[in-house]
Image 1 (cartoon, rainbow, N blue to C red):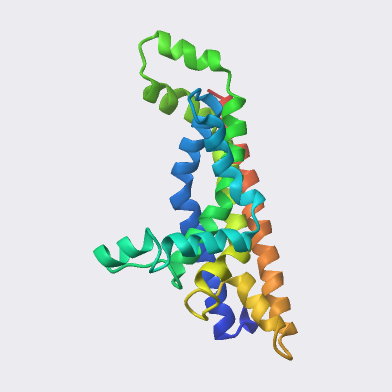
Image 2 (cartoon, rainbow, N blue to C red):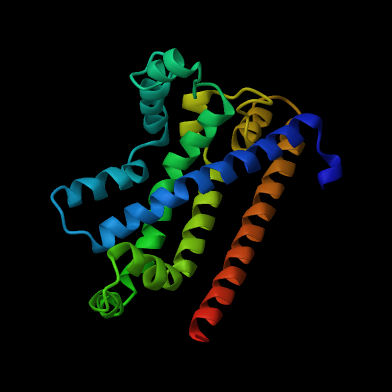
Length: 232
């Protein structure tokens, strides 16, 4: 199957993997912090934070992409500062595709990790606290090892969502071959031209295979981590 790919299809596949991996790795630490704040935190604005995190799940992806363009485009209130100070822009670059994918995947990642944190018995954390451990030490030594399967699940969900992201990406960074054209946007492009069905079908098949491999790897890692934790 891979031997039949054209250079344009290879570029779309490799860019999708790059965008999805960067989106997942960059957003994962923030996802863990956000999930912990939602699961254990009691503070003013808790509901607002929860709503803001999950807003991309409710909004149409095109709306999310347009909001990203308004904020991070070269004339946006954040994008203009990045361009003036650092000469850097997200708009119409692969980094913008990674940003759009991270924003769309973030709620799914947070939900998976939050469920894992809520499944941890708070008494275990309280016992460590009574022994004099700080909140950070309790999190690193007690909570974090117990929620590793949930973190792995959240990371894979984020990666898979990033691989399939279309609406926000094409709105924010367009569909530029070799720069911002990921698998979903490449499939869309091939479906718009006569004779492009075969190429689109190849990319669809590759997308399915990548998703299945990611899911199988997630299950294997989760079982290994759970077994190691249970054996302690």
